[in-house]
Length: 311
Image 1 (tube, rainbow, N blue to C red):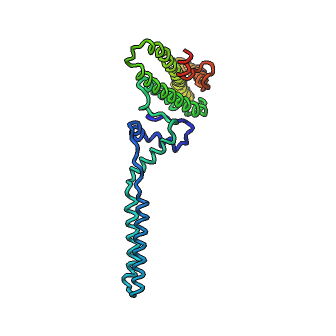
Image 2: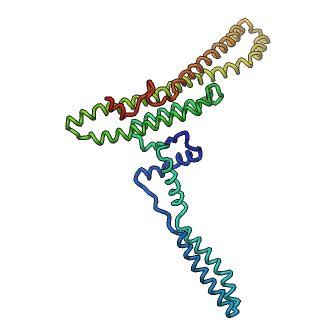
């Protein structure tokens, strides 16, 4: 996904942000839209001028009893007025207006979305891994059939994706500044300060990697449950036709050969159903490790800067 949006953003606004990759890329390159042209102000001036001309024509028409002047004033002048106003208001083309509105929209929600271009290469790879794991869960049949906790998935997985993207954006920005500052610095005093701060950045990345790996473990458990679910469906389909097989065996006199094989089908179905339950239980247990914790709780890393200071 090119843009990750905070789950709390209204859906319509979030979709607009996701569809605005082109504008975001231009903004990151320093683009600022031109202010709107003052077509409205010019139109007011034109309106005043045309109205004055119309009044003058009406007065001349009344004074000279000229029907032509009156018709021109009451019919022609309004047409000219509308034409001038429309021409002035069309100064801004539709694309420029939409780009300007999108720009203002993106500025309003700044900090509540992460653009893929804002991440460095390592961070983009981590985000892609997290998104693949989330897609695996969301697209699985065990999820769509309600065998997993669909409500919690719908809430927790977007929250995990946002939290990972947000942390990676902060990490990428701080890592870029860190490299820029220490590049070419030979003074031992600089190295003494930069080294623990560099370790803090590495530690923060490892914490995000742990989040991604937890998502991948959950996705792996869901994949195993998916395999068992499809196998269970196939076995149930075969078991539903069991009486047909039994009738055919009885009619053909093949009981001695086939009956034990058919009987084993029921046993396999029961064992597979138990395996499916175990797989679903393992998936739910893995999901429990995805619970978001507030920074500062045990097992949750703090901000990179805080770790650097503690070092």
